[in-house]
Length: 374
Length: 169
Image 1 (tube, each protein chain N blue to C red):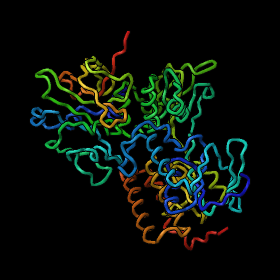
Image 2 (image 1 turned 60 degrees about the vertical axis):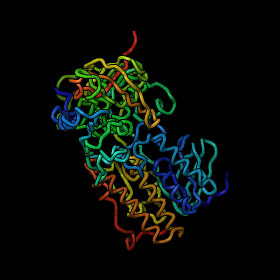
Image 3 (image 1 turned 180 degrees about the vertical axis):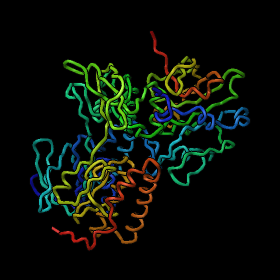
């Protein structure tokens, strides 16, 4: 295990973007190592028991957890050239192109790949309020993991903070698990998630309070309730406080890209509010300013899993192409096809943020941009 | 404060009426016709992709709102089972004479409703507005999204959008 591993491609992250990238690379004969921090491959898909939107190419109408199985099955077809490590973190990128990795807390190893795809996903944001350190204040990801991966009922009665797709979907899944959802509060004047997701929880009796937020958590040694209040256009509290009885306050207030490795590698980064954080500037093949590093999925900007899969395909295709594994014509044709998918997914009203965000960081080409090749 | 408005996922009465099939065709259509309540352009097309008769017209752009050719709809409810947004509902007005209609509703909760069971019929904000009788329970895609056929009062077909299995005791 202590030998230096030298695959063609190292894919960091085994979620929808990373798995799609690995499948694409492997399909062109590349030797791929996938490192995945979680115990299970699939990233957030493993807890997504809802059906996906999109078209047939993104497995629309299929549950996320089933899509994870499809991607893992695809990857297993290439077991002669793909190694996947779970419970394995990429710890750091070094100037000589080495990435250090650790399985669990004991097995440490180094990888010096020819190409790297960073598909590290995202981190949950939290909001500050008095009492938010009480047991019972959760991120939506944790609630979903307890419930959908481990089969643990996370609460009796939940206040959901945030009416984006995650807040709406997790509320619905809580109801499916037999948990009462007292209310959803949303700071913005409109639901951020899809209207149909909101309709699903409304018709099961869950109120959605727009322009409301949680003011403080109530409880001695654990959450026993929450105080919510309306906010005005400036975000100031207005009107009467209201007490909501609950034993869990679940925060679904957004995600931010996980980008430490990209910073370490010296990739050119931009802060893009529409993509919810710092993201790497990339060309149309998802290549960063570093000639050997690609980015895909939420690490490249917060969007949907469907776009993550399309971006993963692009990064995999382009890295395989850069290694000389793909015929120029095939490369161009596939790249066009994947971009058609991405453009379609970002095409509507719901994709306007992603459109405007990505337009700020996608450049036509790195050629002549004076990138230092290390 | 109004919490029951369109912005939080509740269709207005006018929009609900606009989504309903033309009355004349609807009244005579055995098997029923679909109502799709999908007012926001999102990238999604399984209602069309899984429609066996082409009644849900093809999308020029995947973000288009679904359009239905009601003359082709057979009320088969494949879209009810497949729609990720649970936004498709079939209503059969030819069922059971004057007072009753048959609704085919998506259902992903527990406990599973059984044929012959009385269930609460919920409106768009989750209020029980009637008691319905479960006529049939299907799992068309074998993926745990059930399509539940429920006999409901005919005058509530534009209000009822979910069911709840009554709790015992």
